[in-house]
Length: 194
Image (cartoon, rainbow, N blue to C red; front, side, top):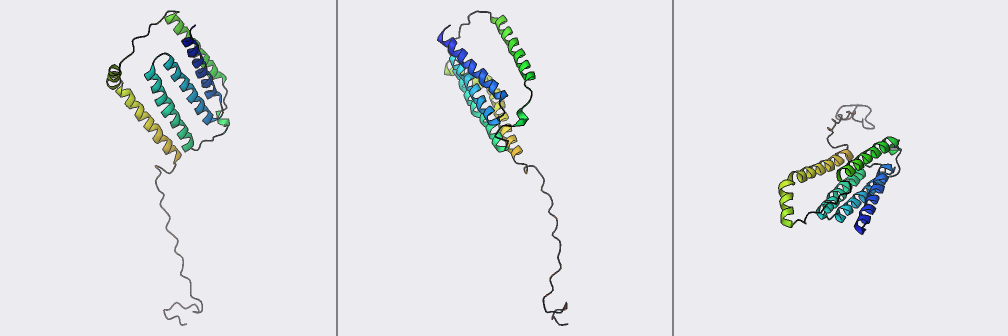
């Protein structure tokens, strides 16, 4: 086992541990911060695997945009910052589904690759990378930007209940009788005489 393997396993352990903390904490803001750690560890795994572009896209899009958007949504909607009993649900169904999915993926990977060695392809040039991004991957980037914009607009609409509501017609003020001047003796003529 080389140092790269040890680093890959350590970053994977950090990602799995922080992922468990995301789904097990009762604090919504802490869950968002644990998600930052999890996604950062995944970006570190990509760097170890010499996929620098994927690592920086992970940092820019997921850590820099999605998590910040999540935290802004929490702040805009005035969600409770402290521990919330709404997040306290039985965890055994999720643990069972997660364990089953993890074992299934592990069995699939072991069956597909066994212990074979995979040679890394040659590093790409900036020309090839730009050609792939701006020819093959333009539509996914545009869809992602529209998704992030829609999420931000949705967070603003949720936080402002007055947006989109029709203004109610103000009731007409009730007409009050004009006060009678003092000393006029109750007369209503213009001269004020009785």
